Image (cartoon, rainbow, N blue to C red; front, side, top):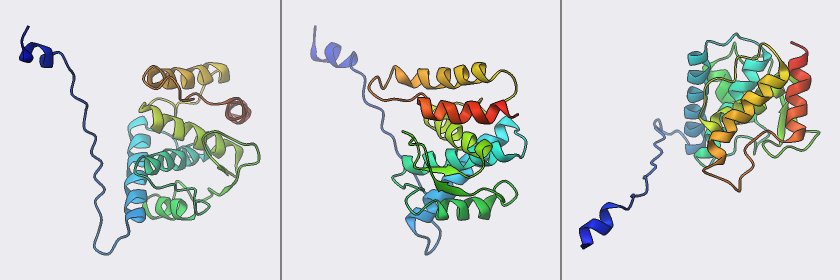
Length: 183
């Protein structure tokens, strides 16, 4: 067995490169939020979702996680910059969305949407971005089956990150359950 045989069996680590295009005079944080909102709106567009409170929250949660992937926490300023970036690209989607401090602690977000349905969307959008799936905007049907679908989305990544908690925690599940029961 030669040197070449040993090295041929090794997998080289994948190099992840994140490019954030910046306009003239644009700050990095604003460019990251712009890119994150664009990704969130693309995800919603691919799923063909209706324009409602859940979708608005979903877009905000998805964009928040996308900004975290680039090292910017969109909740740091109370969500002001996130809402501004959302309003700039999709004013009709987020016209009534308000972010407030979360009353019940969550492992995923310190802010919550004021509307319970939008808050459920905020948590689910964050989860969907984390998992890389595009199927959690279809909220019709049984609530428990929907929560199981959320678990299945997270389970795909759980095998690669066994020490991380990727599923919705009990408090988050309660928020989603209470909101979806109203639909």
